[in-house]
Each structure stands twice: as C-alpha cells, then as structure tokens.
Image (tube, rainbow, N blue to C red; front, side, top):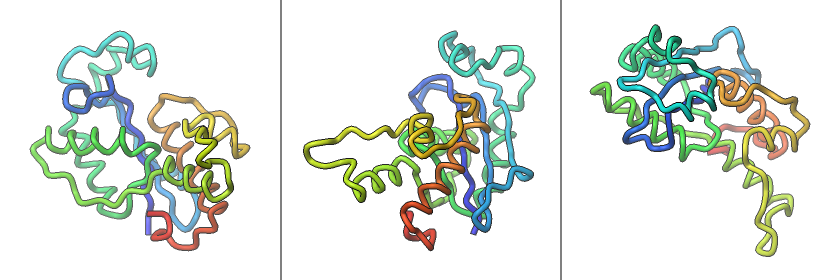
Length: 186
C-alpha cells in the first residue's frame, strides 16, 4: 500500500475563497520515503494573491503566472491517490482545500482515506502521558514536532519540503506507536 504524503500551500486559510498555490506529494512505500517519485507543482490562481501569503511562501507572482492551472494539476493528484492512502499534517487544513479544488474543476473528490500526523502526535502524547487532563499542551506544528523527535530542520512553507518532512515524521511516529499495519493509524 502506498501512502501519498501531500502538502498544499495556499493563498489564505479559507478553502471556499482562497486558492491553492502549490502542491507537493511524496510516496511512502515499504516503509521508505521514495524521493525519486515526488510530484510538485505551482498552481496558477484565478485571481491575484495577497501579499501576505506571498511573503509566507516566497512564491512570486511571475512564478505563478507561468504555472499550470488547477485543472491541469488535479488529474496528477487524482492519479496518485488512486494508488494509495492520503497522508497529511493537519487534515483540517489540507483536506478541505483538496476537496474544494476537485469541485472547482468539476470533479467529485475521490473517497480517499486520510492519515493525519497531528492525530498521531496527539495519540502518542496521550499514550506517553504528555497530555493529561491537567496538562494539555503538546506541540503539533510540523517544525516543533520534528524537533521533538530529533528530526532535522526543513524548509517550511514549501509544499514538497513540507510533504517530505511530514513523511519523515510519519515514519518516526509509526515506529514510536508500534504500528505494524496502516489500519492501526487511521
């Protein structure tokens, strides 16, 4: 079973109105991140993007102008997701944007199963006493979570870099949670 780790960089936080600016995907197969099979693409938005989102992602308007439209990128994502499960860091962000992107292109989103590293982090924290009724703070941001488990820094807010960083974090969490089957992580 292939896990496709996906990260989206967006022009805001609202999937109803803000565009996807970039997509990064990397597969995990047989317990290894397969860097040779990555997919990355900028996405040309239909309208101008706010300056604040450009500052966060370091994506320039001229780069977006030459990028493929969402309608060209969605089939690439769909092809990969037909081959496996979706892995994300913070499903409440990426999944609504992904589903909305499919619908914007006139397609129904495929019925993908989702593994969320934020949920795995919280499961780990509860299991190891880091989260109790008295103590509820546990870092779930990608950079902080990676640091907690001794993973090196990565280039944040770049879709493929975040996807690879999430895939690496997933492998650590799956090991720490002693998960021997993907179904144990859903």
